[in-house]
Length: 504
Ligand code: GLU
Image 1: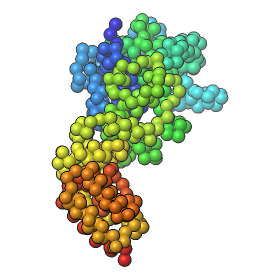
Image 2: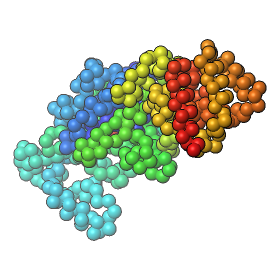
Image 3: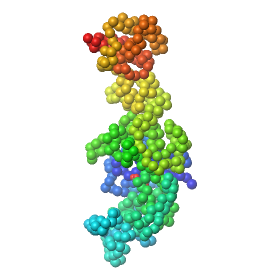
Image 4: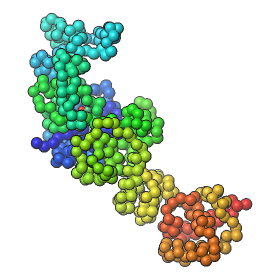
């Protein structure tokens, strides 16, 4: 049997990082087993649709390299893959359940439902659910005379609700939690078909999983309790249910509570793969892409939020993740979103990637209006990649590679610089002017300082400040050689003038 999995987001907003992890786990299982990874857009709740969300989801998956094998715009034999385009397909299954006695029509108005809730609360019932206990007091096809409900149904006044069996245990195997049992008395008579003929999530979800021959459902923990309803519906329809796996929550950096989109702004990091402009709130939420993350590093970070390979191995390529992935190693407990760890993964990725392969993404992060030759940028990448975390850092942390310092660390200069040193700086300048490689220059300068009993800890930091403006950056002589002699000598002279000004 070939494995078929689906990622089934609702286009109600941008893709949260938890959704990305769900997509990743589905993708990994499909690729490991030579199966099929499907994107299904669950847009039955038309009131919650957000413009641009579906495109955002697709763009995110493509940026991450999690391209669906089937889905809207991706082809496949089980389409359409957008539920709104499958609208006419669902009602027949809901009606079938009504005919079997497993579902019924309900006609209650919002006011009647509200009154029922109030009454239940007044009686001290915590959750005023439309359930087996309540349904016989409501207006539906179980309580009204047949002719009356037939008229209402014909007038399009009815919705269809599942008729949950009374006090029955419903069990299913969750591959992470093993056996999960719900008693039907805890479950409500969920609406499966709305007045407008649109299915709710529950009906559309099981019908599509069945028709699309989904073998494994891998989704967030928040859907665990719905699974009991789903399992019952599979039973009512006489269909074989897929295997279920519910993924643990992703927790806030503090470890307390579920990670929310507001936490990103609060703690200063992205919780979305791509930047998202929320038009309603008029807020721009940060994205990992715009923050300078590589998608491979992001996936490596995410794969370990809720799963591990059973060893300490952390740095994994996509091929390695596919090889090691297994549903049985998904953990039950929530996984803390550790922001520092996410940048650590990106840093590791930069360190382990050839300079030439980093050229394109580093170029893409280049500030607007800047022009740099590829060969030079590649040299800078080589010198800086162990010292930065994100793509944009090459330009911020390594700004001195692209323009001369505009100021100098005044405290450090004052601590070291004296005009009496100028003769020595002239000598060092001549060495630079005559030099041909960085190692020989380093030996010469250090030899000169030693021979003249001058302090390395005074001259070398000053030389660095001349080039970089501050005590930062990779090896000084590598910087000197990559900047080129003309630029170095220009910086040298400008810095000495500035140093003299600071000294007075
Ligand atoms: N549409 C649901 C969501 O937005 C899908 C849940 C599922 O995978 O069954 O998460």
